[in-house]
Length: 336
Image (cartoon, rainbow, N blue to C red; front, side, top):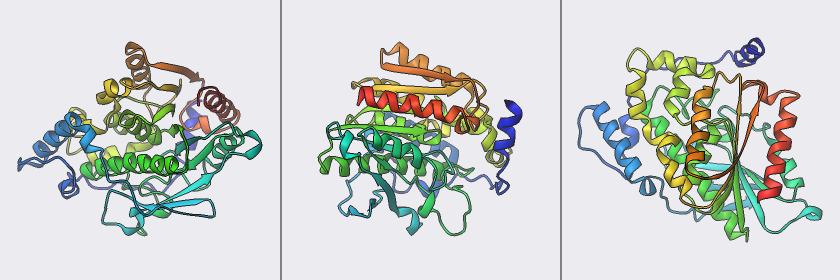
């Protein structure tokens, strides 16, 4: 299994080791401020303030320019970045099949990091077949949102500390904006499906949005920093970070995008959640997946757990992808 996982992980040959950068310029539009002059001290303080005031940190002005045509939903992101491409959010919409409609139910699907536009489409179509409409969100710096100088979504997660936080904040707000549109269309029962990085984004969104009553977290972790530091697919990012910062220090400057700090907020509103992790996952360290489930159990959150006997990449291969599709579809049909 490990050999198979490694062969899939290293098919990509365009990973770039980018230089470490605090990225302080990316904090200028955040709704929290710090007067510290040392960049690390500044980011530590901003993280603490963001966690303490997370409702404000992830707040936004709902888009006023939703455009829908040919089953594509577009709107301007409420988070402005220097990249015009990234500021225009483009999403595919999969309407529920009429013969199976079961009320006004919809989910937002968040793909994995570096997903291609064609990926997760089959899952969206399956969800629509179950009578649940689905929006496939294009994550920040992915798909048509990718700046022309990139071949991978490097600006979503990178050795630039504050830019990575900003991309995460943008993703959370873009997800919530999709729910604004769905509510405008009359959808009442709302959920989300997140995979890998999309799972992290989805958890943060759900913790800050009471409208999201059903969640699917396909790969999960309590710590953002530890996934980047220890994960197989982020070795090149660690290469850029490690000469400049330790793991403990990295945790402190990425705390505000780690799900562990929002467990109480997540548990505060009624939700039904599905957690899935893989026994041989070398991208999302298994101990952090187990930790997030234990944290949920302690708080009495309604949840289902499935553990697959494969790895992170192999979960997307036969036969595992069919089993995962069944579990996700079954959970949504029963709970949404």
